[in-house]
Image (cartoon, rainbow, N blue to C red; front, side, top):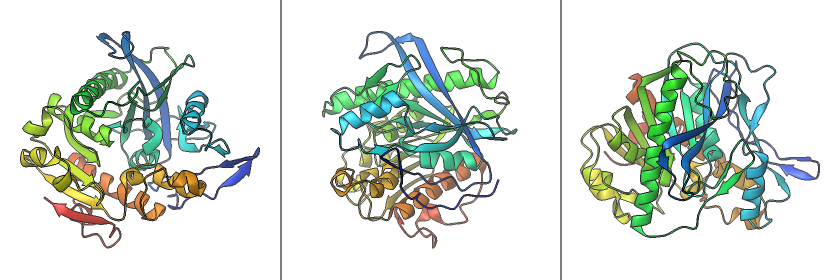
Length: 375
């Protein structure tokens, strides 16, 4: 499949709604995805008191997407909940579809596996631009929603769980990140079932053809934005199956802050969140990283410039745009830079491919928005 040029789709009007577009991935493979509802009977959800359950989207290189509809960015119930959260400011917009073909057959081959955790009050689909890019270049990505901490989580029976009110204290943050790390470990266990040809989905829904034998669980990484970045660091401390990780602009919580990690880790921040100088959690964590580590910065960016929000914002009205923390960086430049940096890191750490574009030392002529801070 030919690569899709990286450009923001032009908004179109359909049924009196302005349709928001997202750029397609640029890699050589088309992309498929399957949604899973996973229940962990061994854990009690601290918010609901029931068995802990999560929603996961597994995105992968597809063999053929013909006849398979693209998944929506958010299912209908979650979309309504998101619009309600914005008090009607998004009611005139149709949220995008992804470029991930629902349950398309999987392209043969053993692929590195990445876990993704979104930010607090964000959804697992809010990093679709990066996730689809990774899949189009040969990764399998399991993006996890953490009910009551993620934004809007819709289950197959139609239930929608929204995030609980935030407690700004470090103790509450550490507790939430601990739940997320346990979620990620559980998902990794269930991916083992998938790899062996089993069906971990609670409803037993059909899986894509060819999925068995494609997940290389000896090459696992984790990445996340904001609180999801903290979860990525925490799961690495708890589970040695996770060999490398990335925190995109997230404060850190829990024991990993003081103990650090002995495997490769990448931190990325913005000038607004100057992690190594302004965030009390980053310096002790940084001091205890004993393997490969870097701190990079996305120039002219704000907190949500690492997510799909940076591409969605220019397609919205000015009053909505101002609420979204995307900085002054051009949307297409932010998307291209974050995609390239995340892929370069995992290519180096999980595939042994050299950083020929010099992204990880902040010296890429193609992506000058990425600045080297420390390493």
